[in-house]
Amino acid sequence: MSLVIVNTRVANLASVDFAFRRLGITPVISADPQVIRNAERVVLPGVGTAAAAMRSLRTLALVDTLQGLSQPVLGVCLGMQMLTEVSAESADGAIECLGVIPGRIERMANARNKPLPHMGWNQTQVSDHPLFAGLHDPWFYYVHSYAAPVSEFSIAQCEYTQAFSGAIARDNFMGVQFHPERSGTDGARVLKNFLELSC
Image (tube, rainbow, N blue to C red; front, top):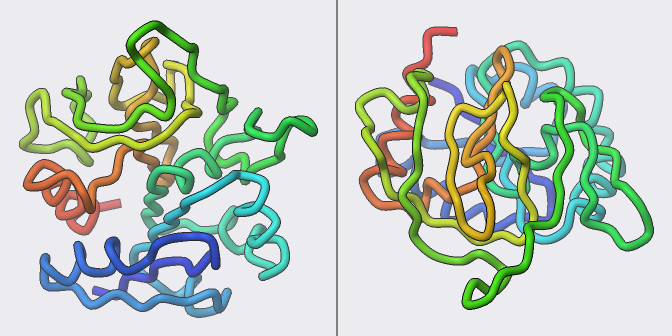
């Protein structure tokens, strides 16, 4: 199976790459539109800010390429957030994202004894989406201050200072707010399920 990890230039690619190698898959790390379009699976990782990540995708001329993909696509953490329509992460205004999954990314609420960023292991309620096949109330590792509110596109839900989408999906596009590559056996199962999707 061919799997491409999109080189957004603003992501920690090594841990995602290694997680798939543990599953017997050798990913290709690329920012080449043709390589990405030809892959059987595409992973969009991300670390940092939505503004920097989207700016990088535009500089690399990857926005149209990613929006037009028909194979399974998995966004991880900031990569998930980039799949939505807009992010409120910038103080200068909303950041336009890829818009392949309806929704808006908002800053999480502040709460006593629950500082931001939300960082650590949390049990997550998952739906019967194929991405979570074989998982029941799994524990995943999160690091984020912004999140997608729970909506009709949520396929997993978690709670920290508020309920938020642990994962979202629409058609062939899926995103997880947690880091599957840092989430032990439960995270590895998510990645394995992604590889085995029939769509």
